[in-house]
Length: 238
View 1: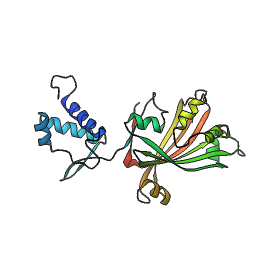
View 2 (view 1 turned 90 degrees about the horizontal axis):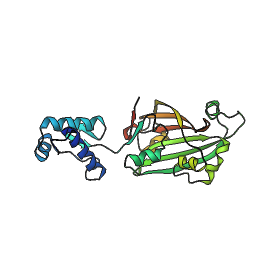
View 3 (view 1 turned 90 degrees about the vertical axis):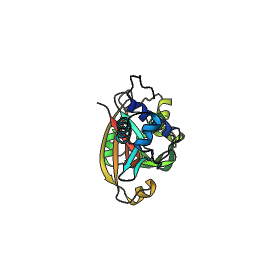
View 4 (view 1 turned 120 degrees about the vertical axis):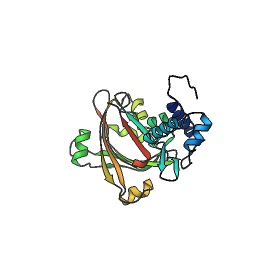
């Protein structure tokens, strides 16, 4: 610990614990040292240790169990939303968090969409839409079931690797994801969603709906994403 640094000691300690988590020295379920043990090892006050732990709890890195101790929490996808990264993809967001993204392709089909999807895609009532469903994972752990809808002009996606980032495919075709309108609400796990995400049926989940447009304000896709909130942290900067 650098005691004459402009960075507060509790922040330094918090960062040190985060580093140990990212490097795998501390894993999900591991019990942290007690305040007294931290205080002795790092030569800081117990108040400093307490503030560091409180910060980690607030950020979702650790969790307290009353009367037992403080433990490393399960890894979560940490997504920060502001004007600069509103339209970063799942893959980009995961890698920025030091996590490895992957996907299982569940289905690909042309459908006759309902009025809501037609409206979001700006297509006519007789037009087909491409529906792609994927199970998204971080470090091999299921986090969300993602259903994306695309207009027929996006059929080039069928020639691409759909387990990777579709945003990368868009960019290869000169289409830059530039703006998104996102809404988030509570939903409850269906039998299939529970099976895919490894949760209980009817467990509360997050339902995130999003319409994304390119640099020319043309719709790229409309998505509905069911998220296991136990593995997801969304921070909004306004």
